[in-house]
Length: 311
Image (tube, rainbow, N blue to C red):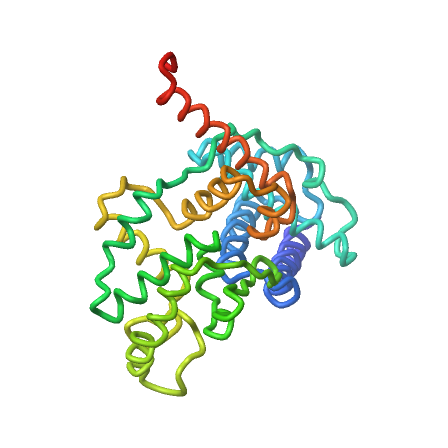
């Protein structure tokens, strides 16, 4: 293949890759954050292909393994390398389905093994401290209190909380409608304390925040920024981390720890695995099963602490 033919082939592959990202956003309805993550990983792969002079449309297993090895040498964790490989696999699978290529070297490439670790959870005392750090005399404090209560009550992903509209909260039925990955809808029951926090926020704080919006009609979003706009997932994450610092909770805790805590508490309280799977919006039961291990570890720790011969 001549240099000119190689360059044309590379440009065609890059165009296909960008079309794939548009497909993820427009057809698969992946969230903005997910599409951005795919884009970063695929762009890194395209940059390596250009640098190495590899014909991406007909890449070999050996070349792909070389790319993964380069990521490892660069200091990326096994989890990150797997994420890159997942993005590449998705791209080549889509190219096959569209008839753009005939061979898929990525499909048979084994993923690097990740050491099994249990999800990080929070204690109920930590969650209480988070809520107490909210100054409910101010609109922003009422908002943050409602946000944290709802996060704990539903086990929702931070992106799902960001997408919530006021109309998604059913005060009468005591439930919230969430839209997960791929815009899949699920309904999650909510306990009264969380509903009280959300109701107070909607009635006493949200109108004041909406009034700060400079143009257009007030947004239907549930959680409103100080400028009167929908709070993004990043904004909510920053809000959570700020309250975690104020509450004196150890560094590194994230909103996802609340999701882990929610699942673990349900299983520890006797909920069946299928119900927890549905409440979390997991496609695979295997994803939910890790929380059974976490529940067992908590029981073991409780036994060690409480039994006279536990030590």
